[in-house]
Image (cartoon, rainbow over all chains, first blue to last red; front, side, top):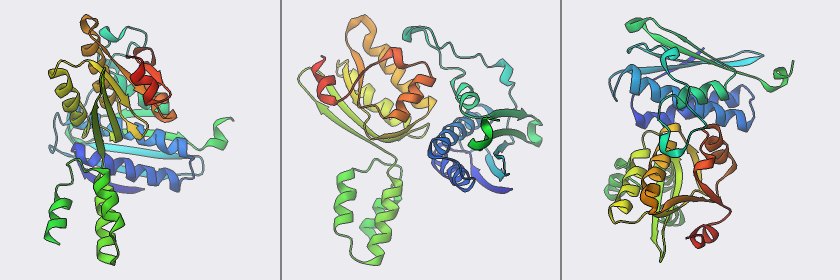
Length: 141
Length: 155
């Protein structure tokens, strides 16, 4: 497990994306998967700043990854407020531009781009988001 | 050296690519090469505005995330405050856009389309950005053109 701790601010999103992009390349994932991972972790880290800490520079984001023969396991840990992902409405992808509301898109991205997304909450003991991206050869099994 | 260091410290500002290219061209020594590398990594977003006869052309390059989305929002607000609602976004050099960035685009579209006063159209959308727009269900909201000339000509 490799871990890097970042201060929870928007300027660090670039570095968090780079950190996990390196992990994805190390895991042997293709360019498209590397990009998907950057998208997913950006959404995850932005959500932590916005919803767990409710602002910038109010806590750290512990970023970790672990490579197995089958998959890349990513986790982001924060010490802010937990939230229930079930409470987040799925975005309405069909409605007109005038009526679209901004909730739920980040989570939708994570779930669409990754093979699994799981949350575990322990309030101020640490909330952990675990994202898994399978290596391509095994996806079709 | 102090002048260059002053430029590096303002890492969050928008640097012009012209400045970077110029700096790269004059790089000879090892020190200046490392400075050029640092400046290149600090350029996260670049926004170039061209006021045309029938619309405004905004070229947005780099990466739009929660850090840089407000800059784009500001640029679009400035244009709207001048009463201009016909906007071409050239995203040919856009490398990344997060959901926060997408909302800046959608909010711009909502504003521009109000009272039928105009709209935002996209030009030269890279495949990855197109895929992101599609994932968000945003493709129906924007006319997309293969090049800026066609996009500008549509107004």
